Amino acid sequence: MSARPRPAIAEAPAALRTRGWADFALLDSGAGRKLERYGSHRVVRPEPQCLWRPALDETVWAGADAVFDPEGEEDAGRWRFARKLPEAFPLAWGAVRFCGRFTPFRHLGFFPEQAANWEWLDARVRAAGRPLRILNLFGYTGVASLVCAAAGAEVTHVDASRKSVGFARENASLSGLGEAPLRWLCEDARKYAQRELRRGVRYDGIILDPPKFGRGPAGEVWRLYEDLPALMETCAGLLAGTASFLLLNAYSERLSGLALASLAAEALTGRDGLIDWGELALVEEGGARGVGLSFFARWSAA
Image 1 (cartoon, rainbow, N blue to C red):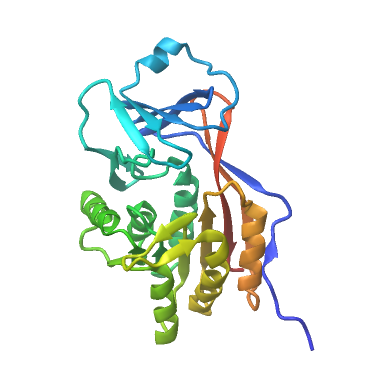
Image 2 (spheres, rainbow, N blue to C red; image 1 turned 30 degrees about the horizontal axis):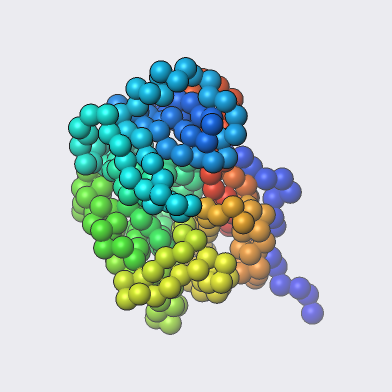
């Protein structure tokens, strides 16, 4: 009996280095901090892995509009503002419009290093030659969903946070995609995926960006290391026979891109194709230093 096919895992990792765009730049980094520009706002956020010295003078850092002060070892904390800033402000990436927001969890309502994955998703959808049906689990404020929809896909966006789903809807309106084939669901990702599998629903592409820890709308507990393998099996079952891709991203210092690729290859046993894997990083404006921020594995059909 011949062995079942399994996707090939790329021999070497990829370091996908986002160098910024009109509405975002990593201006400097060092001494456990990042100095970034979001639109016209300069922001300082903690980043422990920036062990080197800043390149810019401290007076430049002191002129930041907002500084995030962490509380404890997790992502929570509070912002200090040098001047009154709007609660939300418009940003763009390509044709997609969305709002930046000063959240209580150190980020600004989206993750700029994901631009490398947005570019990949845009290319996959446009190259398909047909409208793809895509499931975005843990979709947050929806930038990846909007990138896919703007490229012509039909997207089901799932997130456990009602507030995040509301922000995603607002971003769709800003992008002129209010009438696009987008479904916005406040659901537990695992439960929704399991129901879709039982209903026989299939997708051409799946996006997964799970947190290390989270809770569903009814208090369901999500733990990345314990729960991701089973969810990957469910997602593999949700892929149509002619599916195009599966994208898995994770923010965790205890994982690696190769670990994610190995998990994906096991879940996708029975399929051909290639899994590329590696790290997403931001690179300083005008320089070569970079800050690695997340790990990814991306399956593409043959």
